[in-house]
Length: 396
Image (cartoon, rainbow, N blue to C red):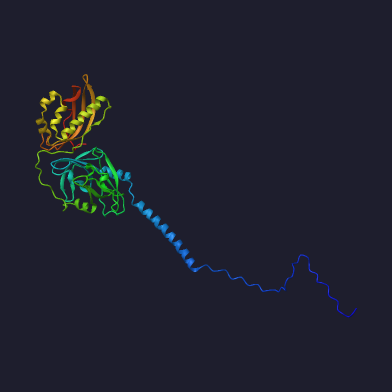
């Protein structure tokens, strides 16, 4: 050897090891940053939104509960209050003679003054068809009339609300149709009222406006249906106290001719609806209607030739110029002869107390039998006779 150092053998590298391209050193690892804390404002905002949802949900539930508490159940109210909401019928010099009314404390009835202006006779009729006479104590400047019952009724008076109604509480009107059927209709709230013109007829004037508890919170009055309005309970409370200051008595009645309601009369058919019975019903209904309208000339066409000779226009006028007939019921219709009939009808008559045939009573129950015949093919009245003496309306 020449003394030179021999080269070292290459270092053996384990198989699978990547090629070394540069000197590698151990570099210290950078520590990971600590977890980021939640954004404080975000936490506050999230909490506020949760609170807002809770409050909104509670408010919605509260609104719903309150709305339900102000809602009126009209069938339930009618069942409890209806027996003491009455029809008012009268013969008057100037009034319409027909309205609804409500029984209040101390035997008084509140109704519309337009129905009972200068009355000669007044009655109230309950839903179960009991009749009681009444006197007019007086009327207010805003159109309320106060009546005093003559005789007694066991119907409970309808209380007047002691406070004004909640503006958002639902109300309902109870009154009568022209045919004498009692009904109830929702009229909205004082804040959002329903137009009275949508539900009114003349017979509903004087009807009470009630709340969900069946208390009177108003009374519908007016000279006509288009002019109808509601008098609030704050005024009504002052009209039912003794010696009420807002109620004034009317002047003495001076008319010799008075009228009741002018709507058509159809007697209730309480027998089989045969062609003969229907003919008798039509004839006697027309008879009562023309009597109420004082169309004494028109009545002559309903009489047989024989009856027309005795029951003249002048005689009819003398007997019926202050009368009003209602509540007709055909209780018997039987065939008479070849094509005639015997028809028995009961009905109620209002008179002036000094009218001919009234017996000094302003209200009588009548029970008459009519002999009906045909002339020229048309059914006409040939004779009428009383089955029993006239009875006072005050007897049930």
